[in-house]
Length: 350
Image (cartoon, rainbow, N blue to C red):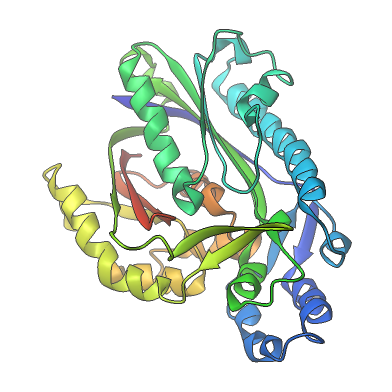
């Protein structure tokens, strides 16, 4: 059994309002594309009021190439990971040397050596710490990364596994991309990081438990590689969003969630709630419909989206943190969707 014993989040310093984003996007796009004014209502309907960014608003108004973007990514990603890791370990009353394994998920930049190796130069982790960098899970990385960390903790009695996730989605903004998907991403994306300490449950004092991770699973739909992800462009990562995502959530998510729960002898009726990655306002509405949820059931998701935007894999951990601070208890299904097209599931007991 794997146990979540500490959780922390971290945000970069720059706060950008949605009104500033709209005005900036209009300056960048309107003179070159008639599509912007047709899509402008998407900014108001995104469900985002503010988001945090590792760079100031002015950065987005200038052109940037791969070297500039990735240099900023590496510097700010390691800064945020160090901040989240330090907070998480302090809450657990532990030092970096007490960690046996690092699992780091990120899909918004490239680092070789990987981010965990860079982090070891910042914080005094042991030199024999196990490292598992994960790239490419996108928005599902928060759920599936937790699953990988839980699997490692379960396989190593007494081990402490620190799961870290950072996404600097804003750095993927590209001025020259006039496609609808880039404009929708501009309306949604924010930056952030989170850290979760996962331990072998048999070795944990019950007073330290935040949640027990009971089970995990995933489903990748066939012929769905074009639903979500990145394309590699001359000046950076090009966002790939299908307009069908809310419909896919509404029509296909429930069956796979039911299948996952059934393998553990459960149904949605047996749960005390669900915790979801809030991809956007339309996705939240589709999730509520797919899971037949009452009004207010996804308020935490809406609040995280409102204040922080879509931080890709990081976002679901912000929602989990908020639910824990609100005093949620009982069995919950944690879900997220990412490239593949893949649904990730966790069954947890708060």
